[in-house]
Length: 323
Image 1: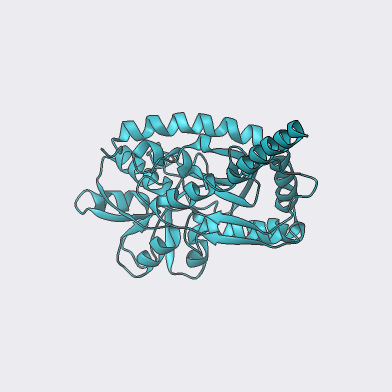
Image 2: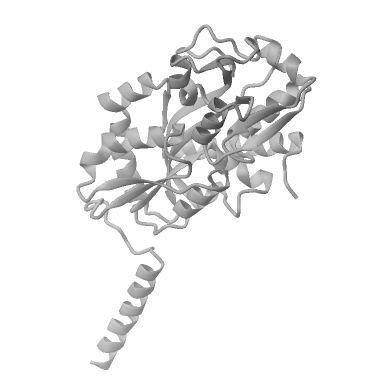
């Protein structure tokens, strides 16, 4: 009897410890058995936020206890992604992870963030930088803008220090041998708002993030920093065509804390892969000029490794690492 009591006590301690650390066995058969939060590390209304909300809306019927998007901004994306990486490893918190996951650590602004804190679920889409100015700006081509930058220090808005749109502008400046004054914001949306207000000269966010304002006649795109012209905007040249060999873009996807059981990761992938193919999500992405670019967990993991090495080299080359 005493042995049985000791055994029960030991099991209780082990199970209690597992639950305390958020590593208790979670059943994929019953997932999701509770509410789920999707953490967006940028402000509401930006490209990442809009893609996340459209994807979540397409998947909501698979979450009977509710699924909600939560914006946690700051640090160019580091605050929200760090929160998601350190959440309970049971699928109750899913992070919207972006390319900043493999750029911020190398600039010294990642606050301990690193890609191996996540188990990637899937990549959802990709996008490239669009050099965008106000519609009434005096520059109508990228060459005119860069020529003006030789005598005036242009204020270029981005989505945070070390974030991808900062790297895009810095890469363009280096290639064109000009100097920009980089102005950081917590996401693309406030940077675009500042541009519309005339407080900065340009932004280098994605075309999808400025498309509505371009259509409204408030902004114009001078060029895209892409390997080839964007299908949605075939009349807009690439920087490479104009003599500036630079192509820098972003990707967005889903990830969970690294200790999340594979069975849960697979279940989440199945749910969101189906959502990514839904009529509503495809229609949203087409209308908003976003490119659907899905990768499964294994392929996404390989991309994280490759991109981490590539951006580490780029950031060091550009001298953007903060001491």
